[in-house]
Each structure stands twice: as C-alpha cells, then as structure tokens.
Length: 402
Ligand code: HSE
Image 1 (cartoon, protein in one colour):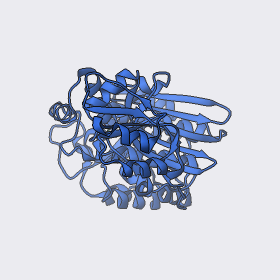
Image 2 (cartoon, rainbow, N blue to C red):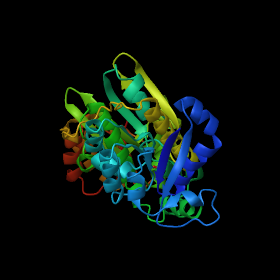
Image 3 (cartoon, protein in one colour):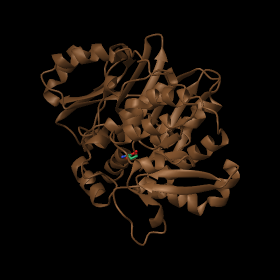
Image 4 (spheres, rainbow, N blue to C red):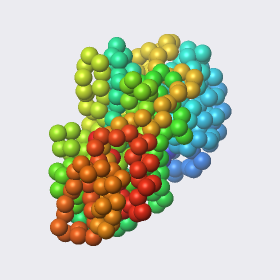
C-alpha cells in the first residue's frame, strides 16, 4: 500500500483526491499497489468533508512521516510551494505537481535534486492540463530528434479568440463574459498577455533542449490588441487567429516565442476551438504528432497528476529520468526568424506602405473597411519587419502568418 499526501485542497488538489477515490481500483491496478491518501495539507479546515480527518496544517507532519512515498503539490505559486517541494525531495519523497509557474522557474534544479536523492520529480499537469504530452516527449519520443513544438497552450485565450471570431464580439466584452462565467480569472493578465502560455512553452522548450529555458528570455505577445477587424480580414483569407507558443531548432539556433498568428486552414491548429489545447510535436523520423484535449479544469488536470503518482510508484526506488538540466539554455534572438506578416494601416498611408514594404505586397481588400489598407508582406525577417514598421507614420495592427 502506497501513501500519498496532497498539498493544497483547492480545485486541482480536490480533483486529485476525487480521482484517487473514484478510480481507486484502476489506480491500484495501474500502480501495482493500492494508493491511500494519508494527508491533505491546507491552511483551512474542511468540516464535514469526507477527508476531514486527513487535513493537516503543518508540512513537517508529512515530511517526517516515513510512510509517505509521494507528494502531490497542487498549491500553485512560487512560495511556499518551492520550499515544500525541495524539502520533500531532500527527505527522499517523490514529488509531482501541476504548478507551471514553479516548474518553469525551478523545474530543472528540482529534477536534479530528485536525481541526487534517487526519487522522482514529475509535472505532467503543468502543461496542457490532462493531455499526456510531457510523458510522451520524455518517454515515447525519447529516441526522436524533436525540432519543433508548436501549441495552443492557453484555454482562456483560445476561448476568447473563438468567441470573437464566431460571434463578432470585441475582446473586452468577450473577456467580461468569460469572467462572469468563471472561464477567465478576475485578473486575466497572465492569460491574455501570454504569460501563462510563455511558462508552458518554457517547460516544453526545456524538455526539448535538455537545458533550462528561462521564461523571461521568451519573446511574448498576448491577444489584448487583437481587434474584431482582424477577424474580418482573417475570414477573408480563410485563416484563423490563434495564440501560438512555439520552440524551434534550426540553422539559426534554438528559438522560442509566444504571439498571435494567422493560421491557414490546412494546419490542424486552425480548427482547435474554445477552451481546448493542442500541441504539435515534430520529430526527425516521426514527422508531426498532435496532442489535443482539455488544457485546464479540475478533473482533467487532476488526472494528469495521478498519472504521475502511478508512474512514480511503478518506478519506486528509481529516479525517473527527465531531460532537463539546470544549465541555462541559450536562445537565438527572434530577429532571424523569417515569415510573412499581415499589416493594417490607415487607407491614406497606402503609398507609404508600398514604399516601405514594396509594391509586390499582397493586398487584402475588405469593402466593409474602407478606412484601412491591409496587406501581407513577402517573406522577411522579424528584424527587417520591425525596422520597416518604424518607418510607417501609423500602423493599426499586425499579425504574423504561420
Ligand atoms: N489559465 C489557464 C488556461 C489554466 O486558460 O489555460 C490552465 O493552465
């Protein structure tokens, strides 16, 4: 019988407890032994809760109990989660977590600490909620040279973009409705400005490179500047607008970014709608493989945490290798990336736009928007694009083409 402790009895933590309760027989079969919830750490009491008796307020009770094999950290945030995880690993307990903020900031050093103590540190639920993408990269695709990962990694922004597109409602209004329904946080900045997707791609990029990709080094743009007119043009182009997080290895080095892109219909990411996430992984022999599913939500995320518990128990006494070293990964600047850009300028700047971007730009005409001149550039580098953009007297908006 294995004993686990859950740190944080919030949405994900209580979901983990539910999965352990509801799927107890399947968990036992999969882990090779029964899994018993011994402790729940929380500041609050939960009178009347089925697991009221397991609630403790002192982490040392858990860390000093030799019976506890695995700790599920579902508190979120950097502290005290970081300290608790470190102390757990040092105490010889394996840890699994859904805490993307902490994994992005300190994951590689925690993996090294786990290795030193011959225990495991897993974090499947930190990226893509219930989608088993990290385990696939770390296990099934270990023999592949992965040269690109591109994903829709944030459900909130994908929901907002889908609503703006399908219902023609402006960003602020959709966000307000999403907040009312509980789909978006009261403070939506982390989602809409791309910071959440940035942390998730930092984790994927670290796994891909085997080093620590610092999220602060990742160029990040969110969706707050996307207008309803952008969708009108996108529809004319038969494309979708998606917040993409990507990392790529090519002759220019290793590059990662988060930004809204116009995605052509032949790319499956174009039809990922609502709160769903999708991640395309490209391996040198495999080609493309796509992971799709619920990137958030209590049960889906909790299911991924329990998958880590099972993996840990199946490898009891062994450290599960995770391809992440604490050494800092060097990223190449976004300047060299070459792509096409969609640009909107005031109609009276048409001549200037052609002067700056060339006469051969592809004009995107919308009779319903006579006040604008919109076009798609030729293939140019990010640096070149930025320099040309500065030469324009005014720009209403731009999007990258994927
Ligand atoms: N705010 C996140 C999202 C939750 O919308 O995807 C899951 O990490």
